[in-house]
Image (cartoon, rainbow, N blue to C red; front, side):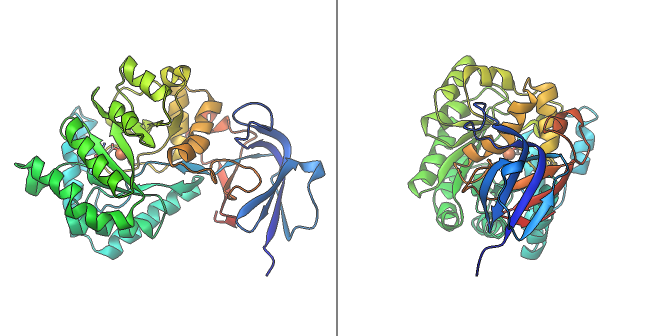
Length: 392
Ligand code: NIG
Ligand code: FE
C-alpha cells in the first residue's frame, strides 16, 4: 500500500530549525511548502517549486508553520488538584516541595483508568496547543507498585517516560530518608526500569541532597536509564553540577545558578531546560535565559505541567513568558520549545522540519512565529499534524 501524501502549501513563514536553509538556527523559509508522506517529511522548499500529485493539498493561506512543540518536562500521571494550595500561595504562602505529598495521596487512591484518562486529557490539551512530543514522569506514587503503575500509564501515551521515584521522600519514610533512597535505587528501580527511558531526581532542599541524588541517578544509569535532573529550582544547590558530571540529558529549572553552574552547562551537552510556568505559578523569580544563552548553553523551554507548581500544558504560554520575562528573543524561545526540547530528549527526528524528520507540524493563525509572544494568551494554533496525521 502506498503511503498517503499531503502538500501543505502557501506557507507565509516556515520555521524549519534547519540552519542549512538560511544560515540561522531557525532556518526560516518564506512562501514555502512541505510535503508529508506517511509519518515523515518528504520535501521542503519554495511553494512555487513544490512537487505535484500528492493525495491531498492544504492551503496555509500565507500563515506560519512551525515544528510541533517538544515538551521535554511534564508530570501528568496524577489525580486531584491543588487549587487550595495555589489559592493560599497567591495570598502570600511560599511554595515548598512538601505539597507534592497531597498529590501523592490522591494519586494512590485513583484507579488505573482514572489516571489513564487524566493523562489522555492532558496530552490532548497539549496537542491542541501544538505539542507533538511530551515527556512524562512518575513521582506521585512513591511506592514500588504505584511508581511502576505510573510509568505503565505514561507509556500508553508517550515513549518519553521518566522514573521519578525520587520526587520527595515517601511519607512512610519520613523518619528514614536513607531507607527511601535504598528503596528507590533497589526494589522500586527493579520494578520501574523496564518501563522507563529516563531517571530523574528532585535535587533540592526538602527533597534529595547531592549525595542522595547521585546515588539515584547512578543506580538508574547502571540499569540503562539516562539521567535528567530537577536542579537549582528553589535554591543554588548541587543539582546542575551533578547533572553535568553524570552526563545528564538535561538539567531542569536552572533558576538559581552560580557562575560555575553556567560555565558547566555551557561546556557540556547537558541541556538547560527552563520551565517558566513554575516561576509564574509560584510567584518566583524567573531563570535568566539570557545569561545561559550568552554563555553558549543549549536551552530548552517546557511546561513542567503538574498540579502543584505549574498547572499548564501550554508551550505558547511558556514562550510568551520566556520572551517577556527571561530575556529570550522570540526566535530563541521558538527554537528552545522545539529543537531545544528535542535536544533535551536526545531526539533528532523531531523538533525540526526537514526531509526524513517526523511530520510534526503546527499551523498558526498568524503570519509568523513571533506572534506566539506578541499575542499572549491567544489560541493561535489552528491545525496540528503528529507523525503525519492531522490531529487538530
Ligand atoms: O517540577 N520540582 C519538583 N517537582 C515539580 C513540582 C511538583 C509539585 O509541586 O507537585 C516541579 O516543579
Ligand atoms: Fe518538574
